[in-house]
Length: 511
Image (cartoon, rainbow, N blue to C red; front, side, top):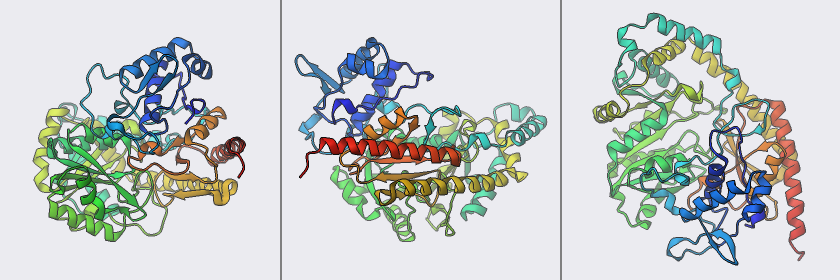
């Protein structure tokens, strides 16, 4: 990858300094394999001109990157990406495996990519860029007035107990409503006593890691998967082993071989993380056969399956499989859900449905870490669900998202025809888009040029641990964009791809 193709997109309204943004994004490019050992990066003066910032911003970012061993500088050869430890070959398109075994952060770890998000900071300001960010719901369409009524009801009936330190397991009202929701929508019949309310799904995962995983144990994750998971599980001092997925979901038959390849006994696997309803980021749905195989494998090994059922509410096909936890799993599955995507992320309410033997250990850790999730907000959510407002909102959003998803797929096919591959269209709030026939163009170059046209798209390579995509692949969210904006954004993207393709063709000699 040449230095002229370096993708840096600065957000001048972000609370993060420009210097830190440059440092973070260069580190992400290195760890995703888009910048490889030995690649040169632009001179500080050149990059400063490209970004429209002072040279001092870039110089200090480069200094921090050199201090962390990301870049190296020698007189006469400029600034380059540092080599990999152990003599790894620079030409192999693999992500840097060090991200799977981090050390806990210290106060001096500022700028380490492991503790930063993969994407730039999200922006929810309408009317700016055409932002195809994944995971952002249609916040402009949230029924704020109806939600305020539930808040008023909750505060109006709040007593001293509700305003004080409530139960660590969560509001009884909300847990009762969650039990009804998952029974009706996911075929999961769980007693209220097994339902724990958390500060979003991520807290539930963090608590489970603290409970179940010890140094020397193994955590299995899907490959590809979200970078946040590698951060959460990597903090445990366990070995995090990525196992590939295909169109049927996690390749259960490959787990033992992948674990042994990293020098570990499969019997040390304590946790297996899966997204069976809509694999992140591919969107594949785990088949019945793979589900049965995974349940059997986990029971035989004494491992726990962590089922993240994100986006399960938004499904666009007639067939819908129940939750993995709804099967006879012999207490091997923990089910995790959240209201962040169905309502709004700032609510920060998620939940875990646990096998009976994990309830007390889970409560013990939650009591220590944060004592409780705000009780009155939980009661407001319980009221919102009980009055039918939640179901009406989900129904309305499903219709809206179906329209936006259909328009996105339609306009992609209009502009790219046979030169686009799409996966994940059956559910969720994003699709995975692969652009073929780009003749050597990189994700970074396409994303950089698209940003110049006011279109923000997000390369998918950073979510892959072992083998990166062979062709430019992007995670394309659509939930927060109107159909008109989607149409405009894809048209601009198509123009960018034609421009990049022509430029690449001009660089490649004939024959």
